[in-house]
Amino acid sequence: MNISQALPAIGIDLGGTKTESILLSVDDTVLFRERKPTPRHDGYEAIVNSVVEMINHAASRLSTDAPYTVGIGIPGSVDEKTGFVRNANSTCLIGHPLKADIERLLSRPVKVRNDADCFTLAECRAGAGEGGNLVFGVIMGTGCGGGLSIDGVVREGPHRIAGEWGHYSVDPQGAPCYCGNQGCVETLISGSGVEAAFFREYGQNISMDAIVSHARTGEPRCLKTFNRFLDDFGRCLGGLISILDPDVVVLGGGLSNIDEIYSEGIERVKNYVFHDHLRTPILKNRLGDSAGVFGAAWIGQGGQVL
Ligand SMILES: [Zn+2]
Image 1 (tube, protein in one colour):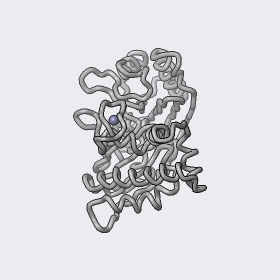
Image 2 (tube, protein in one colour; image 1 turned 60 degrees about the horizontal axis):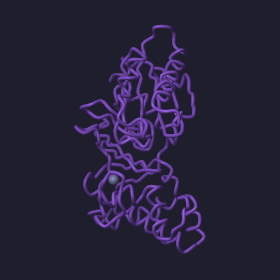
Image 3 (cartoon, protein in one colour; image 1 turned 45 degrees about the vertical axis):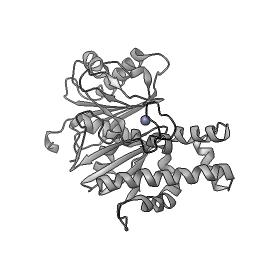
Image 4 (cartoon, protein in one colour; image 1 turned 180 degrees about the horizontal axis):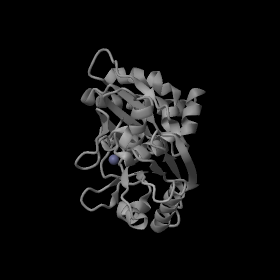
């Protein structure tokens, strides 16, 4: 896409607990921004109506009949055959034609993409992945996802799962995953996966944040769990780098704020990657929480790094 052809862009980051909207001018100036709780307990229709209302609210900042694009990032993907949402953490979206329903209510086309794709595009275009030809964007939060940008285009793939390394089974003896496999990356290095492992081992519910902070004070059970997490991070990311050999890996999601990932975690990656000298930069995101909504707006414009 040539920037001179770009239109104002509305982006929606539809999260499990909050929904954010943004309106960007053709030169990416933020004209409007809004954040609301996602009405996740009120069912699918309430979520659709809330998204449409936020899009209309943002569009009202433009002159009447001004053209604009709409991109929506969701915690899942749209099935290429049925048009129904699949693999969504927000389970009430699953099995619904979200894109078609929003397009019908708006009377305009919208693009809907996985939120990890939106994150990856945003970090490639204006964040830590800038300048990389092959960039892998990692989301490590409650779950574990990813996106892949090749030469400035975030790849979708025939199944629309490009970059979804979270459900790569690395341990056949590992914990069962909701996807039906065992020992998926997500069971090892996501917040929910580490918390579940702690519960299986010690019969105690404790948050990932607490595991990390207690590990830092030397509490033996948390230290063991945290060490295993760092080693699993090394194994999962080392394997990924051996396959893709990306120019840069950008980490996002809540767990990307754990400082030890960028020191000890990278040391563990070196143990697993198929090369004696790891040169791949493994970087923290630069856009923070904003990556999702900017990426969604840019996905709506065409999904490319300019
Ligand atoms: Zn899985």
